[in-house]
Length: 224
Image 1 (cartoon, rainbow, N blue to C red):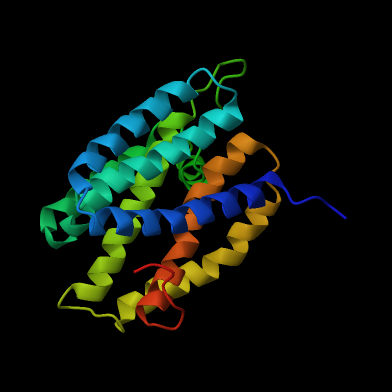
Image 2: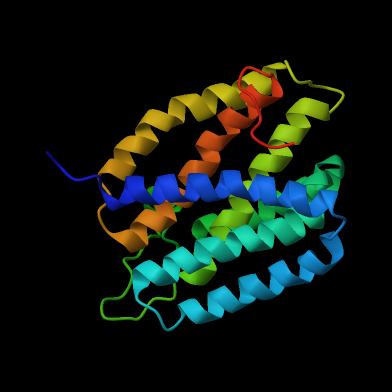
């Protein structure tokens, strides 16, 4: 029987950490410690990215993912960046940065690589070059959570939509339909550096369906 591949192990670890982060953020908010933890999270994220520079690829990518979690906890949760969905201009920023990230050279995101190959601009990373995975992993975590968070809040609370709106259903269906393909890709991923890079957006995509089901009170929230 085949061993559980690195891709699935990475997915499980990221999923558990993502769920636990909701619980400790609730504890921090209840204790009114947001101010000090904002800077603790920022400093921790920067420190992890810098530490990853000297480590093997697998640890480099793993620390980058954890740094992204800290950046989101600071800027997204404590700093309430997710609430920016109410500002129309933010979606222009989202569009411009999304285009840049999708076409930038050196991206290791499977979706970005697909786009670059379709545009015939993709180039294989240079052989023998020491790659620094942590910054990209941290950015992938923060960016994907931010976009997903704003999309869900828009679906829930924008006057044009609602908790049971068609947009909420589109997000739920897209997340659910993507999940089997995500697991197939993760099952084929045996390299730990790639596993962390793929597990992070995979968890965030599948988590959106979980969030909606909790919003609908179909499954209970494990935190307050």
